[in-house]
Image (cartoon, rainbow, N blue to C red; front, side):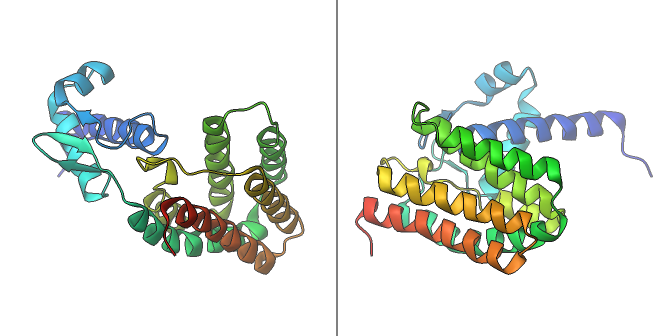
Length: 217
């Protein structure tokens, strides 16, 4: 039995709304506690309220929005984000291990270009955050494992989804840049074990910075 065309179109629209809202939340375009009005979203994305509602329920299942007299972007605590990052450390490590065996030369070149741009002192913190996300997306895509990619997306709750700023010192930025270069070097060498270890250290370093900012141990 085939699915009616109208149902397919509705599902496709819900996917578009879900992906656009999810990216807006993860990139901090939509901040914690931002109110999500179905009609406004529908007007913004030029869809009816039905796919908007479907997308919001999916985002709620993913822990990104909550119902509080209407829909709002969920305000994650530092402890919640640290818990997610514990899982992300394992996902990133395995993605790097697989990518070391499968990554292409164009992908390696792209990673090196991203590092060069990230190390430019003239870019903003938001730009640096976005470049960091792209960097890790490239590695995950290079792993060519659908399940790993899904887990990568599922654990992408970033520290800038907090209502408090996370302060990176120049020394912290230097550590991140060094880890990125070590990671790319191990990928280029096809050294999966080293790539996995550096990827895990990289996530754990960010978790350390969040703990310091939030006053957690």
